[in-house]
Image (cartoon, rainbow, N blue to C red):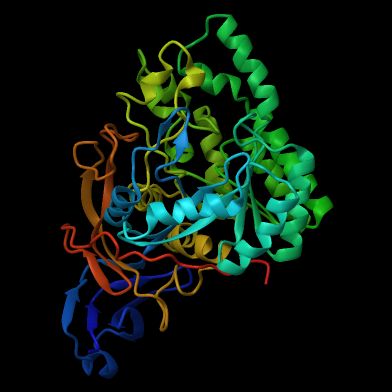
Length: 467
């Protein structure tokens, strides 16, 4: 039995076009688009018609950086794959790429299988995996080839967190060389963790224990230095490089300089760096702990450079680095010692709305909104045009978006499994109304109609900016 849905009357926004068109969905895919009132659109019949008059019809968001159920600092990220993907759907995101973790002494296969087990049958939307390499050796380098064949085509390394995820320059170089050979994209957490640990130790010895000191020890220059070093190592290896959660003006400058040389270097930033700052980390009492993440929030003046980077394409992607820890019972593990506060913020539900607000605020255009939130992450991680656009043959991951609805972001109303909002009380304009995932309505006029297990693992090709 063929099932058809017709989305009628909306303004279809993609990274390339804005067109007043009706969209016909058949058997989970986009079957056709036709202008409103055209003979073609008038001849379509459907089992279900969605009226999008006065609304935007946009591709489902692709969040290429999430951490569901991540073990960190003696606890776990508070969103499961079930709660996290449901919250993503509420926020207009229909695909996540989460990070499977190789523990020290473990094979990549063991780490990846553990993440398959966490996600399988639990996701409301489609998902893929990147692989965190925490133990680079001959055997894990060989395994990279097998993962690329399996559709896990990107590998994250850390210049931070010595003793946990950290890789030294030699290990990073080897992994980059392997990526050059097998087509895998190396993703880098670029902060000089060895130097940061010295500054942490010194700050604590001086009695500087409050959350705001987390931002002060993780210095801008140590992000810029690590970004520069990562770029040079990638040049030596002849490898492409994707730098995650870029937060500082000086780090953007390193990426821009590399791109000006024509190097295949890419960068992402996150809503927290665009909308929050060290002012949040310095909130009274222990409230600043809510905003502890790494790279850390920066002084507000860095935001202009991040927005400029997004406009000039020196930064290509906005992902969330969604890694929520509850304020009560998790963040407060670091009372009296900022270095013990679990690092991470909730955000998977807020990204599309915050970036729409950025359109209204004049930071980016409507099409750039779709580019950085949908199309570019899909291309970067080998999912385009299956994901990230509305075109015949694409998965029918479609959001009907009301650009005029007003909302106030709050923990009272969000769907993420965490007891605070990083954007509590922020008023924004624009809201998701209806969401389709592979043609199935998972949010119906602000009501969740999806289910755990609808979302499927989605293998990825290699980075499409390199083809």
